[in-house]
Structure formats: C-alpha cells, structure tokens
Length: 342
Image (cartoon, rainbow, N blue to C red):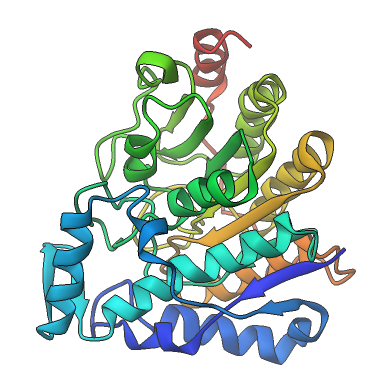
C-alpha cells in the first residue's frame, strides 16, 4: 500500500498566539511522525500553491482578492473566530495546494491513497468568505480539481469533524455530482447540519447529515458509517472519496462533547478504505480539519497514516476509550436511513 503525504513547514507561519487553531497543531504532529519513523514508509509529495483558478472554482474572485489584500496589509479578521496574518495568504494557497498534490498522486496512480497534513483548515469556508478558523474550502477545491483536471465524475466527501462542514455543504448544495456526508455534534457551531438539510434542485438527496447529540462514541460513529453512509455510497458509486479529517470528536478535545477514541477513528478510516476498495479502486484522500487537544491530535494523525498505509504497528492510542457509556443514536440513524431511502 502506497500512501502519499503532503506537508509544508511554511504552514506553521500562519499562527496566532492563544488561538486554538495555531501552529502547535502541526508542529507536534510532525514531531511524532518523525519520532515514529513512519515518514520513511510514505510517499512524500511536494506542496505547491494552489492555482487561483482552482480556488475560484468554489470561491468568489472578490473574496479571494480580499483575503490576499488583507494578508498583504499585515492581517486582520474575516470573522471574530478567523484570523489572518501576513503569512496567511501563502499558507492558505499551500494548504489547498498540498491537498491537490496528494489528489493528483492518487488519481495518477502514483499512490493508492493519501493524506494532506495542512492548515489552515477549510470545511467552514463559504463561497464568499472564510469562517470558523477556515480560509479556503480545501476539500471542495480538491473535488472540483478532480473533476476538471482528471475527468472524475462523482466525488464522495465524508466529513467526521465534530463541527458541521457548512462551507462544503453550501458549495455543493445543488450539485448531484458531489455527495457530501457529515457526522457532527448538533446543535453546535456553526448551527447548520440538521437531518432535513438534504440539498436542493438537482442536488436534492446528495447532502446527508447525521446530527449527533453530545456523548456519541466509537459505536455510534461506526454504526452511522455502516448503516447510513455505506448504502448511500454504494448507490452513488463515487470515483473518488475525499475525507475532511477533523479529530475534535475525540473525548479529550476541549472544543466539543463527543466521545470518539483514537481507536474509533481508526475504525472509521478502515471503513472508508473498504468502501474505496469496493467502489473506486481504493482512491481515498484525507485532509486535516479540526482537532485541538495537542496531545491527542498527533496520535490521531499517526494512526490514520498507519491505517491508510496498512502499517503493522496499527493504532497508537495511549489515551484509551472514553470513560463511561455513550449516547444511543439508534433512532437517529433509523430516521436518517428512512429519509435517504436506504
């Protein structure tokens, strides 16, 4: 199994002291990957700035220009949660471009699957603005790039970040060529992602939301993937699966109240690999979104890379499962299955 990895240390320069989305997220993760030795077994692909036309395939030119200008002035805020510094423009181009490089490697056959270890994250970025720590919709940019540059017709985007990927959803709301599947804590930031948000027009039914209550753990997440995602994916028949890999549903994360473990994340990635093998030649590409416990995040990324690359070391989970039980989501999953006719 060949797994491609993109990482550029320049992305550390997009940072703001005291903000949860800061450079320590990548620095600590990279340190663990180096210590572990897994980097020697991965295919490193070079990050490159994403071309502007790839970004404006999902964002307005006015927003892209305004972000470049804000960074050139030394920084500012696109919303109260989302900062810009002088390095943000280049870092944002490299974040999107790193994912494009991994996508190219997988779709050209250089790698079986891949992971873009990039930031700033992207799934909250809307067509006309950034929000929620996100500047460019990295996974949406990659989906359009796969379609335009590689002739891919159907793309499945899976987002297991604890926050709803509202930006990604908005970009493909009426598009039947991209199926967007979200699991997330609800109601919670950003307030979207209700069960009945299913798309519009020709895209009706191609947006799938599983809005979890707090307290859902490994069992509930895996059941959602098996009972809701898998049959929908088989019906859709994607040619590529993209994963917005946010690790903030871990039980130790400070920004949410779900109860996933590192081992639970490994099971979700393995489930996606099985679907990718069955449906699209194994073509699965992940990109980093959230995850704000600086001890947990590195082990989540390492475990994901081990899972993708079939590394015999398997799971790196020094934290174990969440203490206590987890919320029952049987009725929610049954309702989602009925709504989407699976």
